[in-house]
Amino acid sequence: MTNLPVDGTPLASDPLTRAVLEIDEYSAGLGWDQPARLFALVDSAKLRDQEPSLAEQLGIDDSTTASLTPVEQDEIPAGAPLDEFLATIAWPEAVVGCALTVERLMLPPSAEDSVPEGMDEAQLATWVARHPDRQEVRMTVAVLRDGSRESALRLREKDSTSEVLTGASLVPGLADALATTFES
Image (cartoon, rainbow, N blue to C red):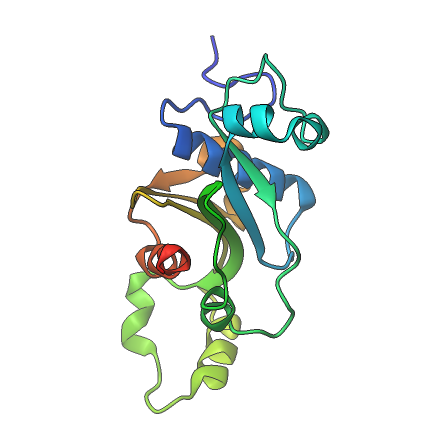
C-alpha cells in the first residue's frame, strides 16, 4: 500500500504542509528554470461561501477537503530583488497566509571554507554557479498570519515527490521575509 494519493502528492495531516506540498507539486509540473511564484493562501470554506464563482474556477466544491487553497498571484517582476518586492506587499484580511516558490543554487556546507573572500554578490553568484558541487533546489515556503511556517525543498537531481523534504525551519530567512507581508 502506498502513502501517496492518486495525484502523487504526499499525505500530510497539517493543512499548511498540505498546501506547501500542493504548491510544490504544481511547480514540479511546470518544470525547472521557472521564475519565482507567489501564492495567497485562503480558507477554502470561506472562499466557497463568499466567492462561489471564484471557488468554482479553482475547482473548490463541497467535496474539497483541503482547508487552505493556494491562489497564484501575478508574476513577480523580473529583475526585482525578492526582498524589496516582498516589502511592497500588503494582503487583504481574507488572505490567511502566503507562499513563495523559488529556485536557487546551493552548495553543501563543506564548500563554505573554499569561498573566495572579497567577492560582491554578482561575483559570488557566478562562483557558486560554476562550483562542481552546486545543486539546484526549488524552495516552497509558506507562512500564516498566526506565525505558522512550513517549507518544502526539492533538489533537481532528486526530482521526485518522494524525495521532497519538509520542515518549518528549512528556509528561515525566506519565511521571515514572507511573514513581514502580514505586518501592518
